[in-house]
Image (cartoon, rainbow, N blue to C red; front, top):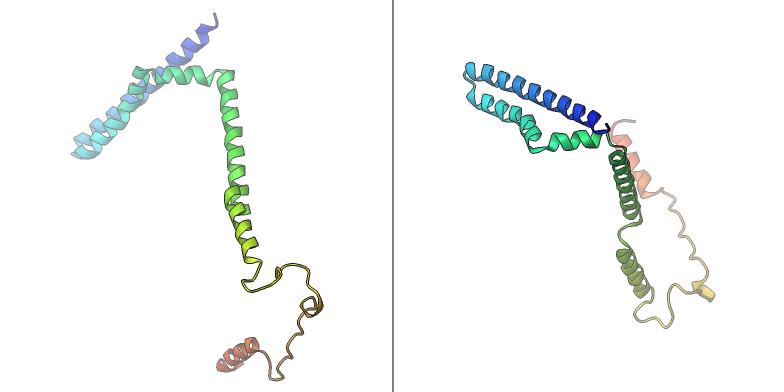
Length: 159
């Protein structure tokens, strides 16, 4: 008798739903007695949902699903699918867009690699002066601009 446990599970679920609805309707009646009719109608609406679910068969479906190993395996597969989907989305965001967007960005970078009036690509291996790094400009003896701002702030506060 494999159907017997499922029948008992459905009966328990229907009883619980009926009790929840009855309690909700009782609370709605007390609220209406206190002359808060709008709130009482809302509570009654929420209280009727469990009975409606029982009458439509949703509770029966849920009871059959809750005690089915195949259904739980299906939920597991859906969970794995969701994790994989979110992982790919995170990696895509980290890389900077979709594959098509990255390809367009690489193409734009290649087009910009050659100066309009240049005779050879500016990113290619250079020779002579272009291959050597440019000398650094000599530092000012009075200090850098960054430190002069900091010094002005410190002097303003008397430090």
